[in-house]
Length: 486
Image (cartoon, rainbow, N blue to C red; front, side, top):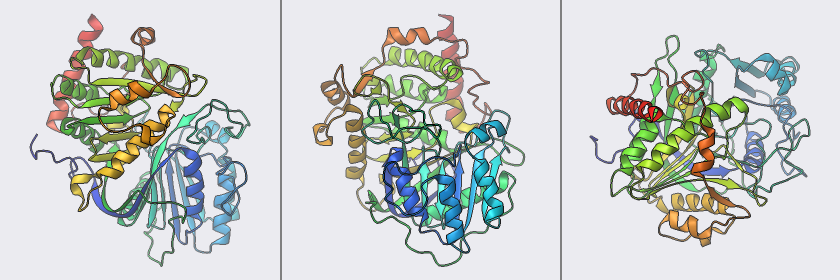
């Protein structure tokens, strides 16, 4: 690869690289929803909310609220606009149908447009190819503070880091209890937040909304006092996926960045992802597994995708790809696990996290499936230690250790140094809260005619992206065809 170990390159593997005054990854929605509520209290001019879905009925805090204002999302946004003259709130969600929107509680926000003098704006995004989704999860406050990651402000997302098997607080707006849910987002402050605001406003206009001006007035303190930053004064890259639609060209920065991360890793790749279905990503991992100097590669996935059709498509594709990865793992450097609660029930993994060595941290909305590479709209944030003027390796390692400890139900100090695979195998149990390895015989039953479906998990334009990405994509298709014939 030309450029040596260069990973983050504007115009290739990311859109832009911007400065962040403070950065804090936030794990699981209990902390995120509370932090988002506290941050939005500081808004004076503009809040942009861009998401796959929103449910105005969700409670931002469970139990006794600690942050002022109404606790339901819709009521809170309406209250913010009424108490803050000059504040406009723009909420854009993927257009997944009016009936589903009614079920998700969006009508109260629509009615509030009239009650608040049109300063609370709601729009459904349908400006994308048939089958494509607006999948970004971005909140931008006064162009000074933002969240970007994997957590949607919708039902069945709230959970604490303890992930108990049963929790009376873990209920959807219909009062039905839902299972444990693991997720991650990132809070950022500074110029990177203004860049995310630019992206959010572009998306609003491309979805059919009127142009929205950037924030020009004085901005107050937005960063919540209780939120301790993990990183300070770092450069953060913004990587995107965009489908080809109308005058908009396809963007595959996210795919290119993933591939470079895999190719440049020296000691460890740690991934949390909802899906493992991307052929080009798996082909890149297979090429690394052939190398005697391959880094350890640890994947944490949900035991099953959600919903019958999703399981048939995604679990079926995962079964085929895992079979190829296990076959390629000649040096025993690859492991794949799913987390379980204390009673053995699976904890659903919705997080999208990638850690390379102790050098790169990536958190965003993209999954390791085909559509996230160029068919859906996605946005990821990347911190590369090579771009910084100070060492960020301790913070990256600490976050990765913290995530692994959460899954194993142990203390972070129990993780220690050395081989992550050896640590996990030493600490994981056969019962209780832990990480369980995928069983080859058990997942063999997940073979499905929907696996590798171009309809359910399309790639976008087959010849898009860098030359070496096209080569990997063609090679992966050939390998999968050969595997299917065996």
